[in-house]
Image 1 (cartoon, rainbow, N blue to C red):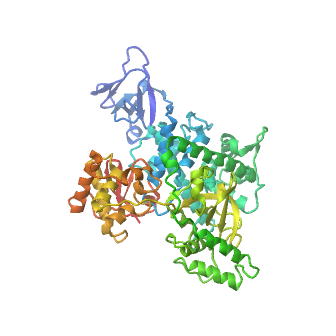
Image 2: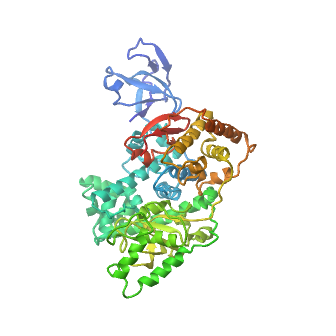
Image 3: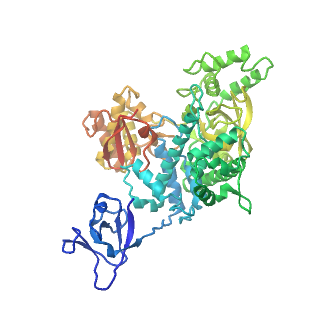
Length: 613
């Protein structure tokens, strides 16, 4: 990777300068002075073949600026420069985490993403207390709010070559938010892959990592974290954590270095004894629980319209809970169990509310949720038998750190809770309904099916929660196609130039023409989890829902673009382009998981794709 070096002046007569060729009489490119910074990569093609005593370098006024390349004699190249991450206002960092969640949740089929703002803020609080951006992990190059290392930044750049980020933006706090989002999603996918490798599978189900497991992956790596989670779940909690780490860090020096730099979680007591698996899980769960509370409080302070989205209760309440409680009474009967005729027949009834109709009793938590909602006339998700699918249900995500907040608690009862697997639930994950009470600050009381092979009420540790989705009253926009399209363009691209706005409009028209999407402009614009400006949790929604002509100049320009799009006069993209995302986020899962994805154009701050699966 490229590095920065300090320019030195060996004597008063030597004047450092970058030249057009590696020889003393070559054309002059730019003069340098002692203390300037020059940039080069030792392993670049030019420097591998460079004449002895010369380096191909670049001088830039700032680390990320375009500079003046050329050749510089080695005698003028001093030590490597150690950059620092400048402090920024806490408000900027918090709002950047909120925007990362909003952008990451657009266009996904998985619903609520791994990237939740309160998790990112909590992670930064754990790593840097939100203000201490120097290196805090001994023996590494880690710096910044998320303690991103040079190796992690290089991985981020390699995975996102068109993001617009450069090697030295690792030293910008806001750029680290995007990298932290990428690393979190990477770990999520790695944990899912570990479950597949371990043979953890159930029909119609996929493994659901918890935020605790994601945090542990950040500390010790995804493979080691998954193994520790299995040990804890399978009855080996007293295994020394150093022993658990050994297969993944076979060199004692590497293992000891990891334990030392993460001593807060991997060592116990004043004497510094290595923790057991159980102690590691307990300690990380306690710290993460506090971090979520910090994350929510910071969002509430600096981004209140995002921290507590509109959560008006439904006019009819949550009648599906009454059906769940009736079923709990039914399953309490002595003659009802998973293996009895009455129990098998009931489970079959639950699956009748989903597209999946197994011939035998299979994990049925998702089917139970679907059946209760269907009985109450409430909406359900596609692939309702799959616990993970319930991460897309409802209109808003309720934040774990804010469950004691009165406004959030008002929407908690009847919310669908998606859980990491644990004792007495499925081996891949679980879905159930939240009740309105907290057992304590770390446990959420829920009612659900397939809990201990029955329907019952029990308290689950918040560390297992992957998502809490509430169905709330959401006002719907009114207006014709041009008006709704203009509002969507305004919400998605008002900061773009005309071509960027037109490209967003083209994607919407392309979707209308595609059999994969609704066949009206309005339905395409308002389809859940597609255009983030319409998400109930996005503060943008309140700004655009009632916009009318004359509201401001940008909106009037978006109205013109919408009219051009509907008239078919815009032609920047091919008809196959159905997706785009902001350059300010890492490559989303829907890009990485599409083998035929092709980035057709970069227009403004958006990348436009065809070939998305």
